[in-house]
Amino acid sequence: MTKSHLQKSIKFSLGIAVITFVLAAIFSVVSSSILGGVVWIIGLLIVLLIVLIGVFFDMLGIAATAADEVPFHAMAAEKVSGSKQAIVIVRNADRFASFCNDVIGDISGIVSGTATAIVVLQVADGFGQSDGSSFQIVTSVVLTSLVAALTVGGKAIGKYLAINSSTNIIFFVGKTIAFIEEKFKIKIMTTEKKEIRNK
Image (cartoon, rainbow, N blue to C red; front, side):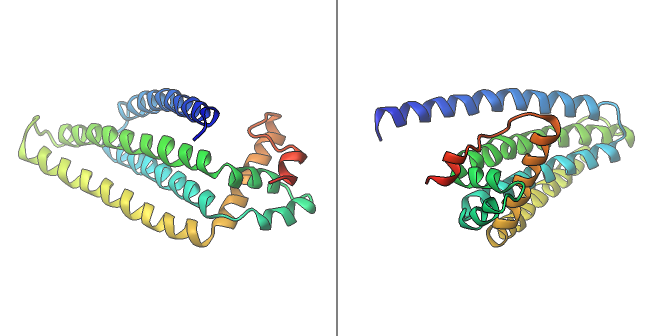
């Protein structure tokens, strides 16, 4: 590895670390604030939503590494919306996967664990059980196991879909990014013609 590559790698890693710190703080504050004002059944649904977010982004990251950019070149030649964004995603699969799997995926796992602990306390309070009671311990074990099972099982299904439908998944992401860029007039990723044409 050359010095320039090492510097780029370190810079990217530091950037990812900063982004992770900020997003983790936001996720934790928002989830804790929301969970603090709802009944336990709604809190459980929020935990499941956080798990699904982690599973979804894990699938996106794997799909990016499994996808081939060739089909998107034909789409780009016909000026299909989202095709250029899809090419950029595939060419930067390592960074895209790092963001989806390591940043969003890991944050979702951490936040879902914290959120589950809050829901356990809500369930115990709702049934009039004191801290440290056998009811609370059993509830904690059941909910934690449920969240873990859904996370692992969901990611297994996501991996299967990502590997077998990578083109469709990345094209969907490309179209979504293109829509956001056109609708809100913001630039999420660079898609210059030179970058698209040259490998």
